[in-house]
Picture (spheres, rainbow over the protein chains, first blue to last red):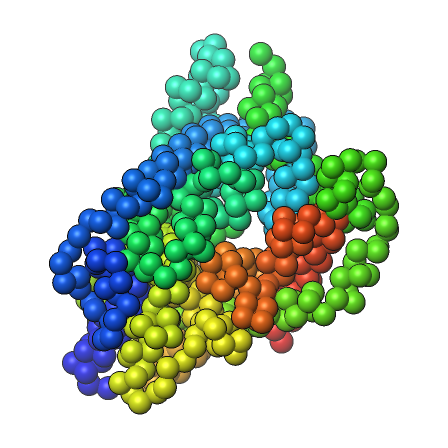
Length: 273
Length: 292
């Protein structure tokens, strides 16, 4: 094939795919600024005739979207902070500390990855019901405080830390916690960023578990709030698109700002696994 | 401080969380699936009775379970190959030396992956609206009559599959792209000197070199697609005529709508067994394929 033609074809296909990938998102943004009912006309309008913020105002003033947004921010931040701490400690221990049964325990954890999370959800709900955590922020947070994936990711990365460095510190009389805090953590910074983004996105986008454990609106996270609005306001496409923008924009912005770390983590977590 | 001791202190928080909030519930789920735990038991635990494999037996005789399994298998069997083909196609395009503006395209194609399923499912519901949706409007120009995408039992699942492919293909695309970049360029060089066409290069170099990556991606994607839930919950509520009721959707309704927690646990376990069996089969077939 003529190289010029090949080049035009490949780039044309890329542009076409990019349009398919982005069109729904751009359409969402555009419709969110339309007046109520405007999107339900033929031909379907691409841009708002008179852009308005009314849908956003309606969502924040009457539909409790501000509350959901704060809930999502709080829940996702706490999950990220706690799981980051716990996964870093465990991943480092699996990589660098010697103890009896280390390999077997790690194998068992990896083996547990084949069990889908949903198997645990019914008894987990009962457990949280008996300890009084159903319909609370803690109920959403508690099962996400440590992840096998996170431990695995940290272990892979921490194995690159030279043993001599840790031994030298031990000979100098440093305790294990000081070694972790002053030597190991600074070296783990790149994987910390990666893991933090992963945890935050996963917590933000999580749907099934919060749907089960949150029974009252006051604790709803954005996806749950949006799904419940979608069932009530099925006809109000403009309002729902504004709700989708509020839900998607924070994670999309986070991804765009940090995508290098995110994509690196994706490869570290899958290809080498 | 003793070093063994320190190691266990480092492990304790994570292991405690995983043990109490994952391992313990999984074991409890197995026990629960052997009981008739329901709304009455929820009110008073003394109503609990051991039913052995009764829940499993009852499920296997329920048409709704089989139809939910059928819909899930349909979603996996059609969705996974389509999704992987889209990922591979996009990765090949991005990997081509002729492609321009690669970082932009990579980001653009990956963007749907990081979005929230619920939010983008809501968008698709409007794009595939029968009367005012863009999809039917565009097809109208080609002379195709409006299709009731999410309201017609024959079209609802294909629409959900199209949505899932759109949402997910970017993820595997990144993995394939890394796999493609790991193939030594001199292999292609040698093939070109021997006069191999691009198609034969793809068939005899790219595909075999990518096989291990493909297997891993296939296994991960299959187990992900078996867990279909949020899409039908938001787009169709399991309908129309239960044509998009997946196994997990059934588990959710059984457990948290009707409060039959015993029976719902049996559904969850059956799904787990099926996923496990499918994964084992895929590994075995690939091993046999690799030997021959």
